[in-house]
Image 1 (cartoon, helix red, strand yellow):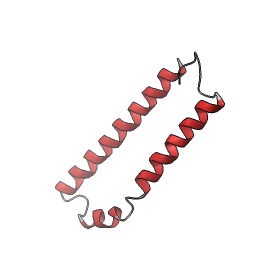
Image 2: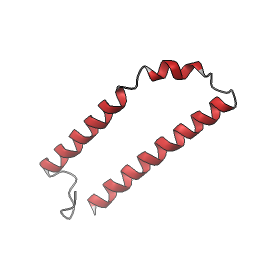
Image 3: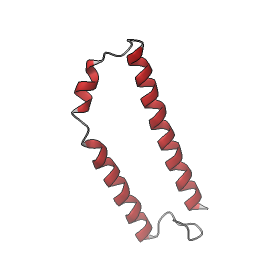
Image 4: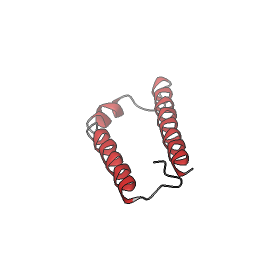
Length: 74
């Protein structure tokens, strides 16, 4: 059962990211958020692969340690 809860958490995280991107896009389209903010934020794009890589490492470490296992599913 723990494996199912973990996958559901990933789905919520992905949905939250998509919602946030949509809200930001609408804010820019309606001039609520200045367009030049994206040129500043684009400089931080290398943070995305770093976060994804750290997430993968932490998941793998949890699986190796046996944490997060309920009925054998990871």
